Image 1 (cartoon, rainbow, N blue to C red):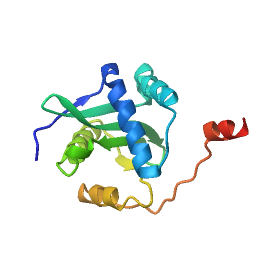
Image 2: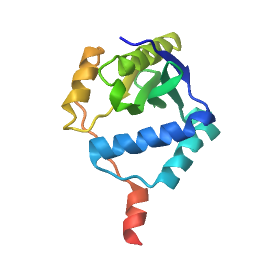
Image 3: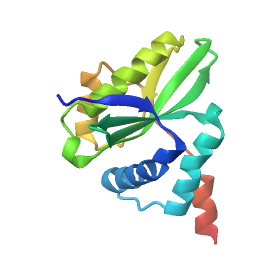
Image 4: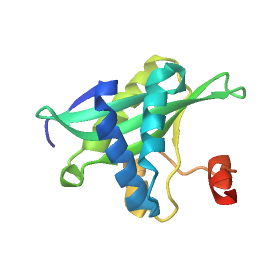
Length: 158
């Protein structure tokens, strides 16, 4: 395992986060994201902290991984679930504990803040990621995900 530091991201990390998000979308879903929209989205999280927070993993002062957390209120449990999103690890650092370190950091914070749990969604064919999540102690749920993406609908109608 390599020496890692996990820290809260700052706006100075934005271009790393944009690159990581774009790379992750291309790798896992074969989507080429609009970089200007993505950049605005990354800055939108920094502009409105209640939306969530990014964490960055560093090794030797180099950014090597990222994770975003957003929040979902659960009335059933009277607490927040933290959603893990926008996970990406530099390819040359994969398999070296970067995700595990990010996850452990976030899990510790969630427990300390009274969070009721951690959730994430994963592309249905990403078996490697699913194996990693299970090894971190997560379990598959009985839920499927549905969505309506108004941004995509607007783009397709023009």
